Length: 242
Ligand SMILES: NC(=O)c1ccc[n+]([C@@H]2O[C@H](COP(=O)([O-])OP(=O)(O)OC[C@H]3O[C@@H](n4cnc5c(N)ncnc54)[C@H](OP(=O)(O)O)[C@@H]3O)[C@@H](O)[C@H]2O)c1
Image (cartoon, rainbow, N blue to C red; front, side, top):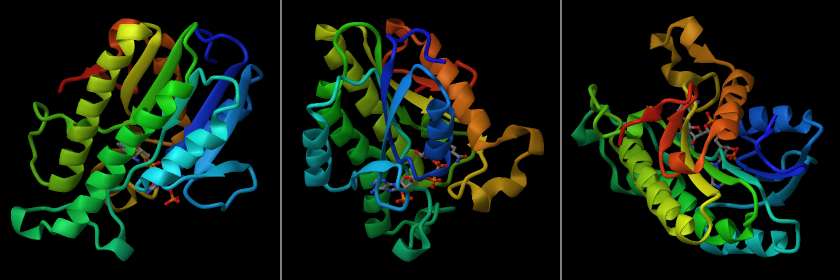
């Protein structure tokens, strides 16, 4: 695992408490050549080393400050995201009249502004020699050209904005560090709390377990080259069109 990185690979998982985040952690923890650091929003696991709310700029800045004396990271995976949250009255919209400004702002905050803050504060902590990858979990529904069904205004818009931030950050870092990649990743439909209310329309063989999807994505990350930076790659390695 992570054969294309220098060994041992220093890896940070943000969103370690989530379905996919936990899947990544389980696989990476079992890998002999990986030193794993977990970040979560809440301290609900003794293995979580750092707390960070990605919607709060000072929290992301504090995280960077707490990590700055560690060896540089070869891989940072941002596995945070929100699609629905009953407490915050967030639910994917079926039509324009369901748009709620406060809910939409929160979805944009978590799925697009948070990733921008992670780029701002944590890209400088990544290795500058050898391969380094910062990967943000995205979604196929963030593709504008692939939008055939409509609906889900906030989440689609937020993931499209995240994809633009990934592309723009990739261009900026490549000027000085061509081996530092910034990627978006589409995990497929994965059996987590985020997808739970929407799984009935998904064929059983197309619903991945978190471990399955995390394994596919780690392979995609391992295969990724400088020419992939700025793209959103699906679990099968295909580029998702913008
Ligand atoms: N599951 C799917 O089918 C699917 C499909 C396409 C794309 N994705 C994307 O994959 C990523 C992971 O999704 P998942 O299915 O693993 O979802 P999940 O199980 O709901 O996990 C979401 C994670 O995001 C964290 N988070 C939310 N708001 C945060 C904040 N303000 N600060 C820090 N962390 C925050 C949550 O932390 P708490 O536990 O503390 O709330 C949790 O760890 C998301 O970006 C999602 O859009 C998932």
